[in-house]
Length: 217
Image (cartoon, rainbow, N blue to C red; front, side, top):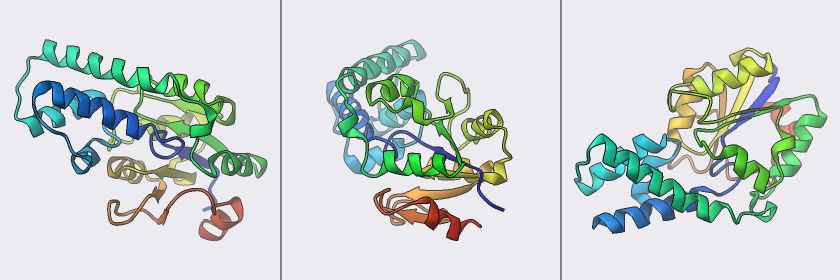
């Protein structure tokens, strides 16, 4: 089945906001009295903010009330927003803009499917919002990846069937979400950290519509 639409995660796929998430979580962990490593941060990729907080607190063996968790989550988001508010188009990952233009010029629909509630603001900052036909973010879904809700909603808004969609993801939870939704998926990153994707790419520098056509006729 030919692919009719491509859906993209944001963090680590379109732009490297993942580093800002890590810095904000690491600062919070330090405030709580423990260290938070880059390896441990892999567990948070593609996961909702509150679930990420639960994982972080579990690593630190810290118990908090629901009210305290909400306060911590808000604090983390304020740190993160301070960092991303200074982002520019220069932080779009290499090859992304060209690849989006290539897809659209060949009639492929393009959507964003991100757990981030800050996705619209980030796309505004990097001047990329107009490249997407549909944007589905953490403000419009209630279930986090690996639940496929964010991608299924994107497909529905685009007017295509799930099996006609190809997802680009850098997180294991996102790959599982795509598969759970009956979609094809390309892992952006190493197969050492990701599994079960159809293909793996290091980034978008060498990817184009012609190659996708060979993979998904």
